[in-house]
Amino acid sequence: MIVQNLTSQKPFTTLDGSQIRSILDRTNAPVRNQSLAEASLEAGKATARHYHKLSEEFYFILEGRGKMEVDGEVREVGPWDCVLIPPGAWHQIEAIEALRFLCCCSPPYNHKDCYFEE
Image (cartoon, rainbow, N blue to C red; front, side, top):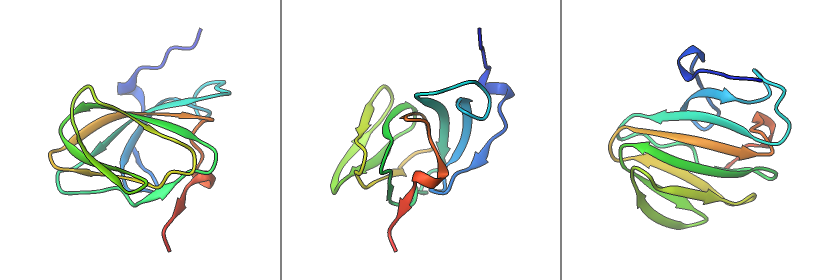
């Protein structure tokens, strides 16, 4: 059995600019098909607009409010909202208030699967 506690995970900044703590992924468990991380974003900050060719992603908002854009559609999101981000969909989240959310990726998150606007 693999059990990871969020508080034991060291935060890092992803290529999109959010602060991440991996909960379960290929770096800390024998994960094959998905990854789960906690992300945080300070009020007024936004991730870099990007997409993933392979990964389907869920953002599950735990705290705060933000504006979520998926392929040009923008909606305000807050606690208990879950956003589906299909593979190939351009997306970005901006924190209206400090945000804390879960990111689930399938297949697991990989830096090489992040594509940014030029």
